[in-house]
Length: 226
Image (cartoon, rainbow, N blue to C red; front, side):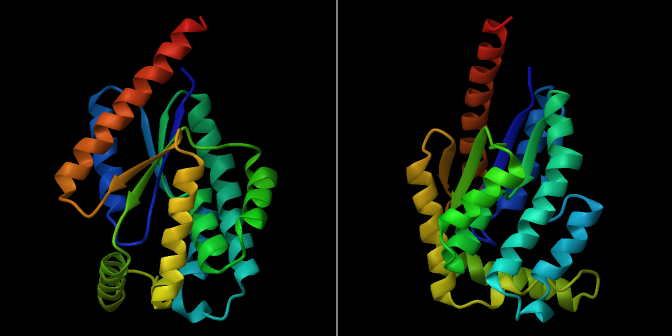
């Protein structure tokens, strides 16, 4: 079977990273080969770009520069990680992808969806996720958790400053949230929205059930083509 591309989306602080790792453990136990990666980042070049994008000292970056850098990191990740893994039949779990650009730069920065989707068409050559888990959360609580987490990491001295987005105001994050909801309405067959306000174990069980069901469908289609 061709590999399967699964992305996790949502506001920072909604629990994406935790749920990505927990799903990876389940799929490994189920016998799948799993690759876990993230955006921006996931490659040596991508991690360098991540440092520019998330560091609070680059607060003056223009929205178009931000969007271009996001897609630069994405292009490298596709070439180095995603396409090779898909070609060898692995399951890719990626923390963020183009939906994040549409939500944060298209919605939050008010660039609109069109430039994001145009760049996606050019840079990603039609590579879309097979499954997207959108973790829907309360805006204020998610942002507060992300700010606290990043500040603790920065004060600990062991991590880069990744506080730039968390310095935005409530209106910015509300636009991001609304953009995510619009994507979910537009692509219900791909985007599975999970209420991330609940206990992590409940959210995890719901994600696992959905992903296993979808993987079974993909495998049945693959078998029917043989």
